[in-house]
Amino acid sequence: QSALTQPASVSGSPGQSITISCTGTSSDIGNYNLVSWYQHYPGNAPQLIIFESSRRPSGVSNRFSGSKSGNTASLTISGLLIEDEADYFCCSYAGSSTWIFGGGTKLTVL
Amino acid sequence: QVQLVESGGGVVQPGGSLRLSCEASGFNFRGFALHWVRRAPGKGLEWVAVVFYDGNEKNYADSVKGRFTIFRNNSRNTVHLQMDNMRVDDTAVYYCARQESRRFDYWGQGTRVTVSS
Image (cartoon, rainbow over all chains, first blue to last red; front, side, top):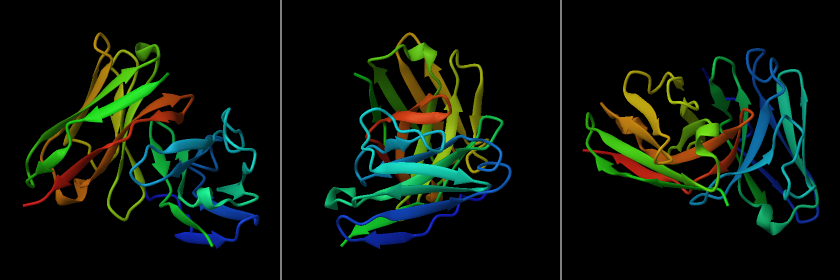
């Protein structure tokens, strides 16, 4: 199964908002409301920032929000901070005890 | 607090074997499914394998099926990944992750695996 499709990179200035898209198929994103998003600083443990497409774990800033429509999920980060510069990955449950990740998006805060 | 600590990474030749371990603490271990997820250099995250509560149910990504084996020891709070017939494209940092309702809510820091001749 191919990876979910994310833009390779996005950039924004401090204070701005950015949105990262994640496109799958009717077998994964389109079939389950089980998209999660992870923030990853290379060398560190990935961190869950959004689950079930739009829910935030406790302790995660409300500047992070998620949505889903059809086969595409989106992560929006508002009020960009320098510390938001990281890699972001979407993930969807794909049925039959399998999961699929996106290729990742490198966020640069200029 | 929940902790997952991986170990066992290293350098191995193509066709060789390696066993990764993940030691868990801070939660009811047998109540959660555990996964291995990897990130190759310059690439994205890739789900590798899952083992469910009593260890009898497990599943694998197609890329590792038949070569990797995941198993757990609920008395020692550990999960392992036995990697056989390894390939160059298995080179990655391997992460242990806990599953909560089909999301990965806690991750370890990872252990680095290099497959090279």
